[in-house]
Image 1: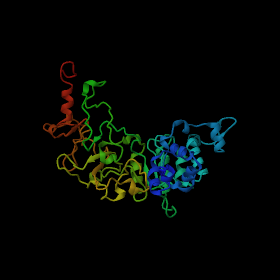
Image 2: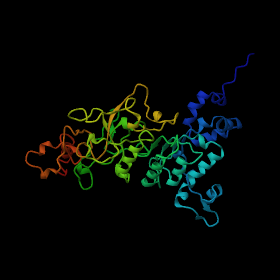
Image 3: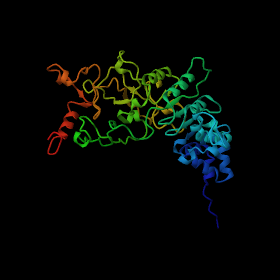
Image 4: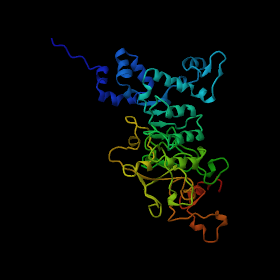
Length: 412
């Protein structure tokens, strides 16, 4: 009687480098460690034979919080000099205190000779002080090319700007910096500001709740809501304000730095062209606008940005960070055949030009907002206003007013 062949084992499948290289990046770090603990063969496969596949994309933001909690006694034992074990007193700077949990992780990876294979590192929502970021970007054996620092804590704008300026200094050695892409500005989760909405039309638009539903009955106020934009290319999937520029301390300083980094380091935002207006200072873009352009002329003074066609240094990085490669090209790549276009603008040049509800907007060639409010306009000028208090006069402002009419309403 013939015996049936045994089914292929997982270990045999993983010895196929094609399967291994397309599977391991999907496994989070805890799962990789559990897989390596199954047997010596799996351990050798992950830590000795193919560490470049296993640890190329390292996402520490999904680790359980207890693993990243500062434990003074344990950290002092692992990283000498960080703490005084006996008095539990901090012996170095505050940065070292907050960096201890992540340093403990990096210490273990370095001890297993795998830290140098990490080329895409994600630290979103974690505590990552400037001292640790400087080590990651400047020291050996780190080899990080794509770094995500979205919504990190204990990292000031000034310190990060200083580090990046040091990386791109004219006297830097050849083939440096290693860093090629930095995610920092876009939010670290799928929650977007309430005035953003999907451009593909797959999700329902947010309905107006009217001025009578909120405290104070402020005209033009919109109750906070979440636009469930698919995780991915937020600049191409979403219209509206992708992040709040006010959350970054030095807008103009960041814009000048992004300009200086062109061709060296790419970011998840770009410098706004202000509709080719030289009278406005540099600002980074935070508003994504449809390629349909201005509501009147269906264009804009500048050319739209197009993935696959515009120069790489003019395009923002896409979300999420790439899994299988640590290059800017991969971070700006979409599915084959997809070449979406969009306009990237800042809140300064779009003030009183864009409706914060429906994202209808008017370019500099078609509309010049009045410098005074409605009460200060000369007779006959009121009809020229396109946007008032963040709402387009022709549609959303009227809708907001009518929502408040009726029995029991503010205007009824």
